[in-house]
Image (cartoon, rainbow, N blue to C red; front, side, top):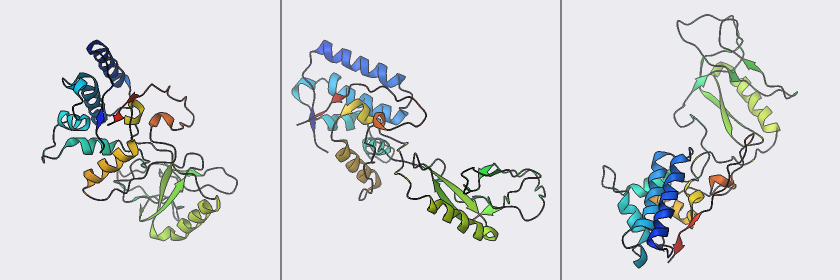
Length: 253
């Protein structure tokens, strides 16, 4: 990670800059606690470090300000890696199965207190989504599904996983074919990370690659998203864009 130097400001100017940064980061509801720590550590190293005018190593001071984790590993890598911009399907990391969305073959029989949530079965040719429920009288199977079919939104690229049991393998193939017939979905708009580039200018692609590699202790498979590195630049369907803030420069030495 390339070292950096700070802007040449008077002590009063630097103090005001740091105070403004603190005020802004604590009012930005998008910023998770770990990323806030990184932003404040970067602001401290840039504006409030005692050796700021003399060019003390920037990233080294950020690393020291964030201390180490319980294993003695610098926390900076993990915290920056966690802000690497990407798309993550909600709940996909811990969902290994789900309720089968295939049609019910026989009348519903209650199974004690077990209930299921509603879900999209498929998008028919006329474009109107079919929704069924798992309550008494509903038409959805509801058994434990082991076959997954991923549906990508044709506007955002965001994905939803639909589940089918072995008895509904044919239905799973039918739904997969219907989704495939819609064409190639767009690349997903990121929904994680991308906060640090909203506050500071730097070679964030390099920083993220190095941080992810060190956090994983191996080669980084992270790639910059098509929509850009800063969350401020990502399209937000159905919502007003967040006003862009001026970014503080981290100037490579």
